[in-house]
Length: 434
Length: 93
Image 1 (tube, rainbow over the protein chains, first blue to last red):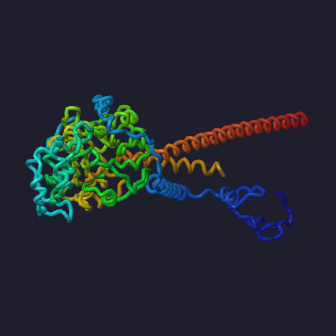
Image 2: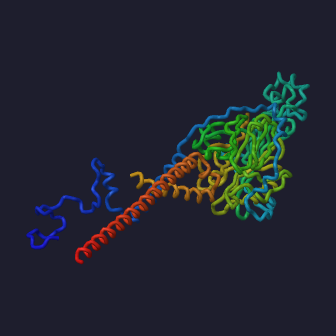
Image 3: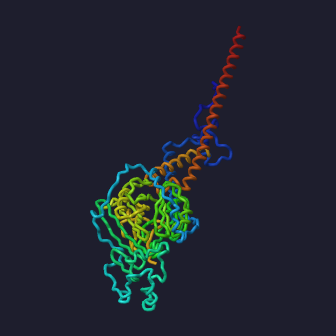
């Protein structure tokens, strides 16, 4: 610094000529020529750390919302694989072996069993819908006279009666259907009517379908059991929301059921919430990628139902063997001997609302829906659900999507009390009277 | 500018995955981890991580070079000063 000069003292912001500096005092380095506003911002003094972290957190939340939009909300159509199974191939279903060793990879559990005693539970009144009353419609005399005790394959007298009462005898097969896979009219002949439809408060009976609905209450769960007999396997159908296969397409179960004229329905495996998982519906293979570590349930054209573990599952082979429906949610609840399992390939073991499909024998099935997450009914654990299915007499049972999705629709209305008011689902399993 | 954005993107994607892991523990049926969107996010996170690592390595190497340059400059100045001192001492004598 020079001494003895008449240079003015240094004052920040004031140039030697006395003019105030226009340079931004916070700038450490001059911006290069042509730099934009954003570049200049990054060359300024760094923002406080709390501001940076808050901005990042807000961006994380925003990104999660965008993800949810694409993952859950926006529907995406998918293309079906297109392979179709045939009823005639159903006899070959034995080619798909069940691997019980998959249980070794089940979630951690102490393996202790629980028991369910239906006799100790309260059986409550339940109504299948407003149209359903206990008044049994009068039976027409023609129908009474024609009430057959030897219907079914015996068509020796059918042709004569056809002329007088075609409506009644028309239900009697003009030819034998006994050997047709998936036809159970002969086996359960006493379950069906001769043409009239009987809608009682707790049931539905027609010439094709017999449904009995019951409501049970235990100390911590309320559940609904629909006992179902079918004349033909085609009376059990599945349906997609908005009749569209794809992710993100959801619709209320009541609407889906109404669109297909379903009598009773439960939610399916919510296939639309994932991009993989085997989907076979009404004989068509839509998706063949197995959902990893999840059991598979297959209903064949001949009416048999089988559940498979987490090992590799060939969907095309299932189609070739006559698979009619297949779900990939799980877990399966009963082992190969029909006994309730105590370890499951699932992480949702705790108490929850549940939906399950049960199988007794070809043509005889049951829908089970358990209310949960509410006062009076907290739900069932998987162990308890498995014990319940065994207690009902099922030999195979499969858990469907539960939680808020668990719903049973009958007579156009929701029969149970879904958790959180329920929610739209991507698919249902329904009984139709064709 | 990319150097400033990359760490924030890594934080955001990592934060999203932490949330996915927590939700997946509660309800794995919703497939928050195993779906096409999160698979692509993992890919982006891997690319971001590689870019960030490259930036860090470059900056480390630049720092080392700068330190070496400064040390060399200091050594040179010390030698110059020593040379000047020696010459001055010789001149005085």
